[in-house]
Length: 88
Image (cartoon, one colour):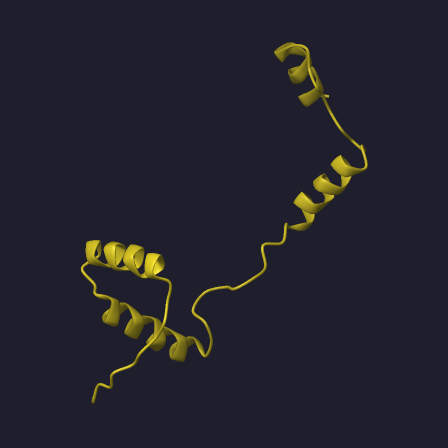
């Protein structure tokens, strides 16, 4: 298979950290990019989930409760009081 030169622009710090890590794995940047592109083709999309950093429903409910002072426990004056609340 013929190889072609490709030019990309990335943050210098990101490249440095990636190259260092890839070298520890016995890979160079070109090989890693090739692996990524092959996996992208194989998956017919990115080979990993890409999402916003949005809390799941359980975490969102806990955050909402905290904001609204609902179902709040503590502070506790002692470990015994904490344990009593946890076991309730």
